Length: 263
Image (cartoon, rainbow, N blue to C red):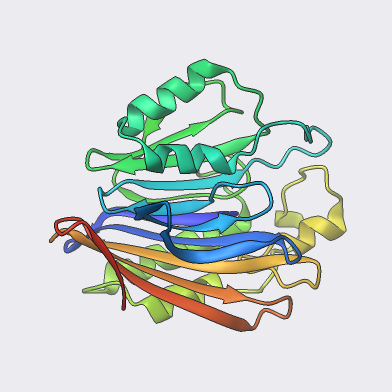
């Protein structure tokens, strides 16, 4: 993912709401979100080039979300795939806190990343560019893009504010409104843009919540709505290089029945 907003215990019946955009090269092969053949209890998209996933959910109530950390000129092409960090968490039984603590202590040579891992005890966050222990994310509306948690980039602040306003007024999250918020192509003003070393033209391109570009752009938007009665709804819309919707998937993950079904 490249932009994600997550709300904990903001809407009474929906203790967790996650909305996220994945930005990537359009040529990079990807599998749409679905239950994995080798692990039917795991629902996620799949990176068919490097492996792993950027966002997934399991029937055990585990959730993982990964974003890359933008650090121009420091990418190691020989580093292991960051997508496996999310996949490994979803496949095993360690608590979110224990998994991220072990990851911090491993000192593996990954390129920069942010990883959210959640279970029945809550959401935890770790970045290998913070040089700090994993933290438990407090209740409320938080967000992450390609810097560390809640770094106030304009597109993160804009989506965070709009999601907060919507959830404050809603009896239940409106998926149409959440998709609309994350399909925003308005770029930030030049004076608001961060300087991450990619140059002004690219900062402009990357400065909107939804990126539309023939080579690199928003490939999908995912919404996860977890209900207090023991299930979650998982919605994914996929886009082409023109920003047009080319596919969607809707799933229900039942934590009590241990099932995943298309809806």
